[in-house]
Length: 182
Figure 1 (cartoon, rainbow, N blue to C red):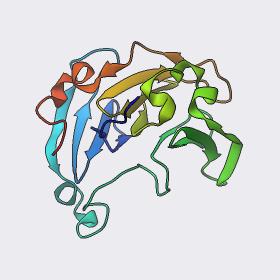
Figure 2 (figure 1 turned 45 degrees about the vertical axis):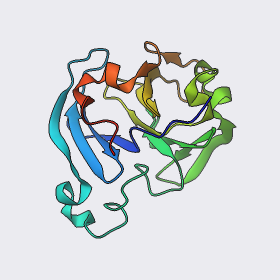
Figure 3 (figure 1 turned 90 degrees about the vertical axis):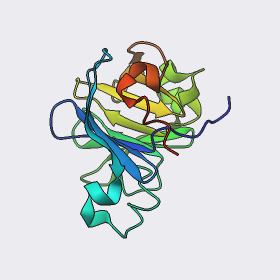
Figure 4 (figure 1 turned 180 degrees about the horizontal axis):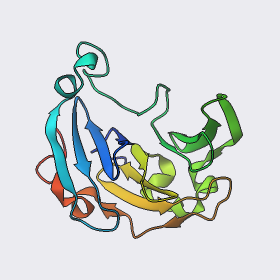
């Protein structure tokens, strides 16, 4: 499988219910998302990171932009539903860490081994961006121009896909005309 350029470089869910920030190169959008539906709404139009987050102006986070939502070498990350754990993804591997103690939970594994539901999908070889949904034990994974929603089971491999792998612009039509960012 080829690795298309990421449409979304980083994502994190807001503290406000069903709001998410998507970062693309040196720009971002904030939107209200509706799991399982396509009536999402743009709350903050595409703008430069430095204008929406003035404290980042003149830093590497504004130019060239944010690549991941955590200060690590990881490609992407999302928070687990278990304690203070987070999933970190880099290349075709992932791990869980407890971010309060900074300790590894379990071992570093291949994505396809820890998430068998992703075997044979574009996500088996890596994840560009992801975020934990406001829906319990669900996360959105993004790679290239595609995404999938999963129901995850920390510490087990009983994860399921919530729907099919889809084109981002089909599942998030409010991003048409915004993605891909040049």
